Length: 212
Ligand SMILES: Nc1ncnc2c1ncn2[C@@H]1O[C@H](COP(=O)(O)OP(=O)(O)O)[C@@H](O)[C@H]1O
Ligand SMILES: [Mg+2]
Image (cartoon, rainbow, N blue to C red; front, side, top):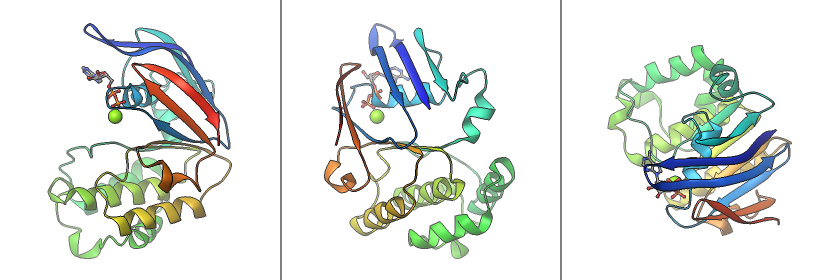
């Protein structure tokens, strides 16, 4: 369960998140929508404990994501809007994930194959040098292999071609269980079979929140 109460985050004079309260429980599959700058990514980063809020709080299964960062992140799979500039080779990155998160290597390979990402010929390449689409496919494969109770995708399909998007949505549907998933998206039609709740944000606030 994710509980966000009266959460406010400012950057200089910009109020990115304006006293937002919302909770997500097991079985919630949420499309988080709204125009650029609405505060969607800021909300997600606060849930992940990337920033300290100016006021309000976030609890993940009762834990503070900043104070209990390691424990909280063990239960979350996150694919960011922009892939991080990781300098490791694919082999090193995969081994790191296997050791640090207890993810099975064969599961990463399985989901990479499902996403039509060829790992073997690319293992010595730097993650940094892959195309945007390949990076996203690998991050998605890792997130699916992690089988977390909470999955968070921030515009995960922005760099994917239509075939890869189709594969991604099929895998999500297959793995849809009583966990929590949050998708920041502008492509609501593609997510219709997966989501059951739709939230709109604008100007740092939630302007609508409905079951669909
Ligand atoms: N790290 C940051 N530094 C300065 N301003 C930021 C930062 N992150 C977000 N903002 C500002 O906060 C507002 C909300 O941004 P964001 O949460 O990224 O919106 P969205 O993901 O909905 O497009 C924007 O005005 C953005 O410029
Ligand atoms: Mg964003």
